Image 1: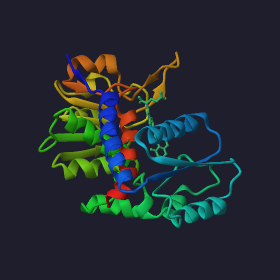
Image 2: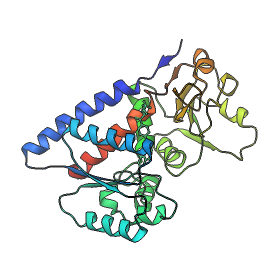
Image 3: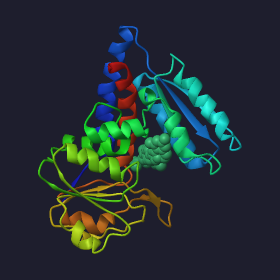
Length: 279
Ligand SMILES: Nc1nc(=O)c2c([nH]1)NC[C@@H]1CN(c3ccc(C(=O)N[C@@H](CCC(=O)O)C(=O)O)cc3)C=[N+]21
């Protein structure tokens, strides 16, 4: 039987550690504030943004929230980000994605000061990650590293296969696994013989955005499987990119959805907020 990697428990553990650290910073007069910007009223985004604000409140981080209308222009958003860059009260800036189509996401991400880039999406943060310089790590991949480490799963020398090459998960995941001395393969939608490649994995990270795509045929006996997908099935239940019931009996450890990677993303966002004052 596979170990279920409990992201909820591990994220709680990290949040407790951060709460204690924030308390000590407060005693030294150092406060932390995260600015959260949401453009439009996508209900899923609202849920995530509320979860982030709740996590801030729990840990003792102040949050400022900017709820802008769908019709906000790119210039208005750029101006807001610039004013937050210059605000000494604000330590971190998070612009919830996706943005409405008339706004250029890349331009907004580039406008955020790299010193306040708690999502780790700015090209400066990405560059720092790849050259091994200190900087903000992209939250989902950083959360996955913590899940592995805190489950005593070593990465060094392991065959790590990532399925998916997005800027927010696949690519930074590759950099982090490499930094941990894994042997890394990135597969994607144009990959040939995907099954042959995923079957080599000791650690398989799945971020393809296709519901229950990875079945037992794609995994090696005893592998560790990390599921980054988030979908709803016909009954409205959350599920991932991995067919959990089919894969679980074959592997040594696996993350569930929900309760796996998702909660870790928020815990690592909180860690990045605390990182702004550690420096
Ligand atoms: N600038 C920006 N930064 C982000 O980090 C960002 C974003 N935009 N846009 C959307 C995605 C998605 N994301 C999630 C965070 C937590 C859960 C999470 O906590 N999931 C729970 C379930 C939550 C539920 O019940 O719906 C779980 O998997 O157990 C999921 C997804 C952050 N994102």
